[in-house]
View 1: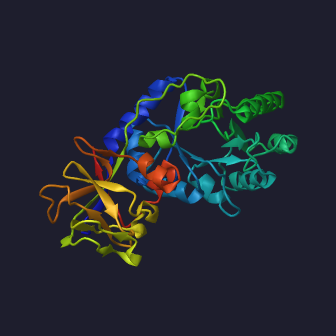
View 2 (view 1 turned 90 degrees about the vertical axis):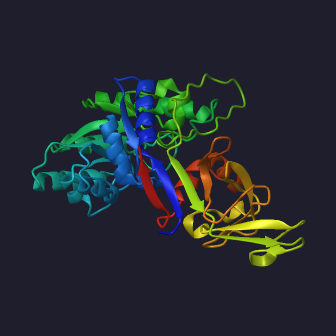
Length: 377
């Protein structure tokens, strides 16, 4: 087996979920977001571990992701957070998936399919556009959507939801405006005669900083995997209470080649890195095809023998070089940590993200499928 792998701690994942549930309280449902292959961690093993930890709701992006979970035997409720596309309505119902809907044609197709398949009433959640202008029913078309729902007896409006633009910005005026809009819509829904069980707004950032968004369900994503966003504030701050979580994924590889080079030696493609003094270099079987960003070239570092070692030269498609001159006893086959920790060293997805000018979500999601996942705990 190619000696590059990711270790996924299902024990940490289960503990993170339980700590999040404890953080919001037992009366609030936690929809564990496992879209995008569980943020690169592997959706089926993570879904099973979360069910074992007590998760009754799982959040995915698409019908395809939902079907994958059902075929793996996952019994929890599955929320399709970006709805469904034309032609998928039968599969949504057959596999008991719960779609967010907002378009009139969503209602029409699901109503016909639920009647055809004799699966009425079929539960749906209504997504509201409160200002993000991405997905959801706007206040302008909401009366039409509610009227359509009233005219069908095969669909049950079980929940209403929206998504916040900038929950991590503690003094963001747009969040307050979004919440005012959501409360107004909730009143409209209730006055129209609906009694949704679930009302959900909060993502990871809102879990920590906006207690007023929790409602009856929350949708944690990145914090399930051990990370929180950095909070920003230009004016008056607000208290932050972070659930206790630990990183779930470590990314590792091994030294497959060692060589000594002299001073003034150009290294790798384009010779962008030149040694100043004689150096001992190690080659690792991992590159940008595995998701190790080229932006880390001659900027990032790894952990080897509980010591930091710098990446040198351009990261290639399949190979990366590091300078182990300051690592006593560095040898062929030594384990190297790209993300993770040793006794005295830590490299987190945040450190990669800051060097890559991105966020931890992308760092985790871009770890490629040829990096095998090994599940522990």
